[in-house]
Length: 100
Image (cartoon, rainbow, N blue to C red; front, top):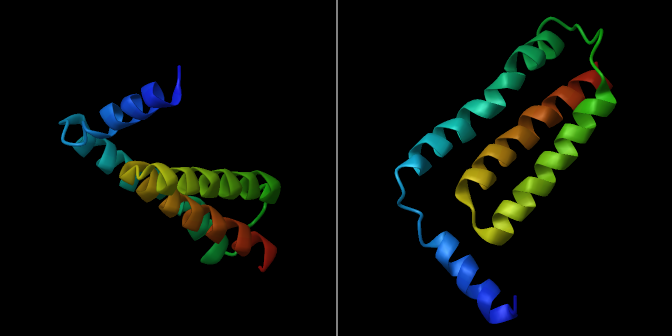
């Protein structure tokens, strides 16, 4: 593929932003970070860090940040929302383990 073809493909992919499944993806983008809430509560409120792998959560944080940056570059709102919230949630776990 040449650069003209890639540009046309990229424009074609972004022009479908009103597709009905996008509403579902926005819901998933908001719900996904909530999965970390029990871990956050366990660390910050119950002061229990036993069994929490800080290296794993650091990895999740870095990867979510990478996805956020990619979402910003491609102007993909669901990626930006989901991974910005994931970065925050994951970072709360990391900081809770490191500073408790």
